[in-house]
Amino acid sequence: MGDGMSARKLILARPRGFCAGVDRAIDVVQIALELFPGPVYVRKEIVHNRYVIESLAKRGAIFVEELDAVPDGAVVIFSAHGVSPEVRRQAAAKRLQVIDATCPLVTKVHLEAGRYAKEGLSIILVGHTGHEEVVGTMGEAPGSIQLVGTVEEAERVEVPDPERVGVITQTTLGVEDANVIIDVLRRRFPKLVTTSSGDICYATQNRQTAVKMIGADAQLVLVLGSPNSSNSRRLREVAEATGARAFLIDDASEIQAAWLEGVTCAAITAGASAPEHLVQEVVDFFEELGVKEIEEVEIVQEKVTFVPPPELAKEMEKRGAAR
Image 1 (cartoon, rainbow, N blue to C red):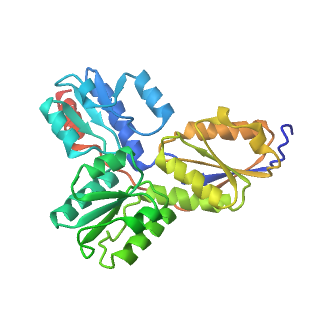
Image 2: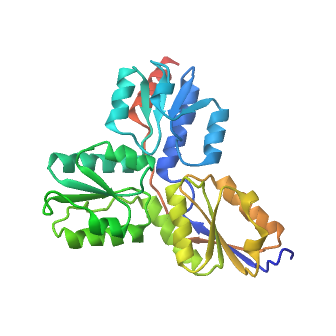
Image 3: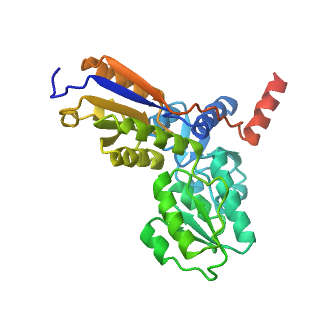
């Protein structure tokens, strides 16, 4: 086998790839493209994956950064990452026909933010500056929410009343990183209000747990996902923390020969917005190198599904009845 690679084994993590929220968001765009004469606009990337965006754009979806670029009265889809109430107001003012593909687990965090604000709590959001999900969540209570992204920031953050603080988190964080930050906040604010189940979504947690298991056996872990995908970047970090070398790649063409030097066991996973065919292309790449032993390691079965947004369900019903 060439390229200095001596890999005999390839491990595939499961669960990997699409989560229920991503599945639903992509379905929403595909169904909308069939139902409406067009054009169908999508605010921001529906999910953070280059291949998904390119394939939907080819089918006719028009991606825009902000609603200013959408003509009044048009059909617009909100991405899985959610939007602030300000964006909803803007859509209403432009009389847009909105289909909301926000992941229900993100909506849950928005509702928590609203509830904490009503209760008069100072809210600390654990998350990454500038991420679309964070921007949307902060818009729920702009005067009451502060963003904390590191342990240092958690040590420094000031609130008017240390006895009345609630914490919420971005859904795609590293579980351990988030817990360390929340522990600091709990130490500083002993009456900290948290949600019983936490906010990091099931899919993020499951993919991180799976990559920990496979990273322990592999010298190299390849994570399929786009660079702007928060959960994919976290997977790479979690893999690296196991002692493996880990790289985030959009597809098989980005694999570098130098990464394979001295590797006897490699592993693959995929972020929640990465399509399975990209994983299979990487499997093909290793098979062409002569790797025969391919093992799939499943840590949990995911059975979560989400119903379509009510606006789309209504439209589908109307069309169905008209046929």
